[in-house]
Length: 505
Ligand code: BES
Ligand code: MN
Ligand code: ZN
Image (tube, rainbow, N blue to C red; front, side):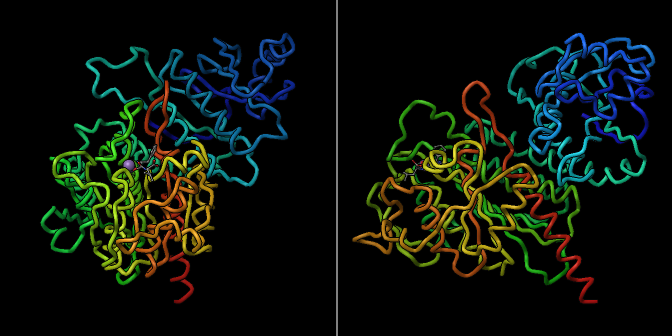
């Protein structure tokens, strides 16, 4: 889909369709008002007749409206005007784009971006509109012999503002939104690809392709190189599989030389059978999504590269396949991590923390400003927060607040969970420095607590995206989360370092 920005009045917009909003109780938005005037009160008449009531999620499509240049007018219900805020705005754009994708015409002028949203500006509204438009238009049909629907979907979407000054401001939002959406779509594609295609080797190839396209540096460490560094916990996960594990390191260094990098670490289990602690059969196919943390690192780096963000950013991906096999790690096996801590693997299905702990130790060598790991780590996190909110854990509350804010602004929210020392108790082992599991209670916290043992040397946060990285059921598919959260966080960081620098001068 191609996006553009324009200013002008809705009745003069040409093309297949002009989209304007209607609040509940027949209250017209400013753009709808213009159409109403141009059409000699046609909209008012329809509303009086009860053809539309302005309820959120509703639409009414009109053809050949007198006084209007565009072939169609799409009315979109916005709900109660006093309650119109971020979620209602997103719903309105989503409703409009879904309808536009299913009706005739390949282009539209969207006046919804001109609606006031509490606390949010033109840049935000434009950025969110791009993200939402991509989200509802996303399809994954590359493995079908024919695409799903023959319908002509929307090809061009114009963001339309009444004021020329707003149109100028909006371009920043368009640029950011497109970068985020392309990054998130990349993450979705990687997630949706099945385990027989998206292997650790495939992830490594994707990182190499990114590096080539955007002049990033990439390094791929293989089994022998990891063994030489003592990454035994990571390697213990890959032992049962024929797919070779990879440690992928990607660097986007557009910040000032010497600026400490932000490091993103992704869990890249390209399929999680549970290993010898085998998972039950139902829904096991969804464990192809167990590399979504890794996918979000690649997607975020793609977004940062598209924006040419002036920041030093390093992505590390711990990629492996967790399979049972004659060489597979067994419950009770003890391995020594790169950090020197020995770990009793009581359950081979708690493998995410095992690949991450070595990757997190490896991150130390970059002297990071901060590290965020992203992982589909625990079913317990899904029980705690459902599929709406990602779990956030951090050894620094200020850093946590920064990430929570990025989630709030980008509409990709997280919620902070505790990491209190008392949770360490459950990870005690009779035979090693620690076990890889604790009891069932607080499972997402004990998992995070396990990771925290390997991140004491730097500012760190952990995002458990087990509930948010993909959807199950009829709408099964990757969400591209938390690419919006991470990308917004990086945009803010890039701004901060810039202003800190100009202060120094
Ligand atoms: N990848 C899973 C976590 C998961 C499960 C994410 C279901 C989304 C949906 C992870 O590797 C895992 O298996 N975790 C175990 C840990 C347990 C053995 C301590 C879990 O959550 O059951
Ligand atoms: Mn597992
Ligand atoms: Zn897993």
